[in-house]
Length: 588
Image (cartoon, rainbow, N blue to C red; front, side, top):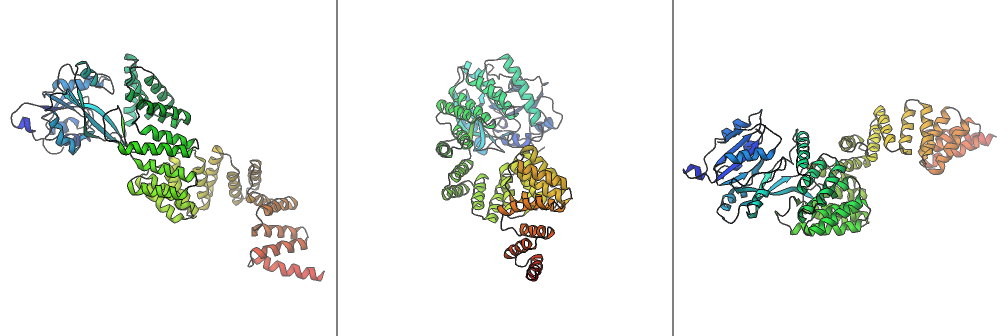
């Protein structure tokens, strides 16, 4: 339950209650101590409205000196927040959520704002670190979380509730600050996130029915649908939001960013570019759309154009400071952008420049995984597979949920024939991208090389279900041969050839199976085709010699075994057969 609450300055000295912390909570016993400790010595009272907790939320709050009130949940966040404000005795209100906390800098500076009589509210920056973000270290929301306690200032909205409209009606001035509130909600792996997301979607739909033309409701609906993976619906909500004439320009730019992100995931890359151009037109200083445009240009095989967008993004990001201009800001993480630039340079064949960019990214942003992936690729291109593995492992250690990093690490292990080591990263990759052909093929190959033949067959059949390839049929033919299923061997060889397979091994496996059936002419035809495609393969010369012996053609057999000796001087069969055949020819 933590330390007992010490009264803050005003209350401890018998003075008035200047600042009240107001929060609502339900089953937040785990998060509350961090939140309440962060306001120790800052606020004069804590008011918590509990909406139906079944854990120790109430006990934790009371242990920190909170005045606790109870309100049955009625699908309305504004109503719950207004209940907390109604019980507050301070002249000012600080609004926090249970999974938020003031930073040390905010703790020191916050009370000093209250002496400024010009303003009715102050914007505080809610920083939410992101677990999986491309070019973003955090999302930053700037909201009026510090405001005067007046009866005409109240929250509105069932979800994503806002105090700003009532402040605007009261004619109050709102000041931006650089004070930060740390939020854990986006960063932690909460088991109830799906439930909260579904609840918010339902509340947003109710709110939209009540206010069908509200652009901010449409915007938040787009955000919630996007998080739920319902991308088409999210894109429609964003489009409806930006079509509203009363949508503020900078907020519309953020909505266009959301639209671009949906379209990127839907592979509508031209649509991404259009949305990003609109975002830039509305807000020239907004960096993230430039990076999204670069990602789309990479998918459109336009690496030079992508580099131009990345450079623009980096210029805007480096000159930006924590602000409170938009409904949603994005704190940049340039490591990803630099790595993407390096990838584009690799695509353009400019390997030395690419490696230099990757090394700059690693030096400046050592906690970003993507630059290490880039360095790993440059090592792999030079055949330095041990160094590549080291770089890929470093990337994985920094960010275990990087799907392509798992695949890159597996490929580096495979290049060194360390098949057992390749399997764990392949399984991690396929857990995220279960139908990706390269990952499926590499896993099947690794299973085959580690002797897990039954699993390998099942894995190669998965490959065929996704991407019917000659290589998969060849592997299945080889595996069928290990269990003596001759008909399956020939069936898969035929399928591989029907798909345009050019690999000499297809003809070799087919020829060997024909030999097992003593179909000498068909076997020889297949093996001669294998020889034409791979003339330095000893196994082909050996099989052709055996066929010649079985069809009573000693001169042909001698030529084949002599060809075999030229490739493999210590081959035991050839060393025995050549003298015998030469002797027989001399006797004849």
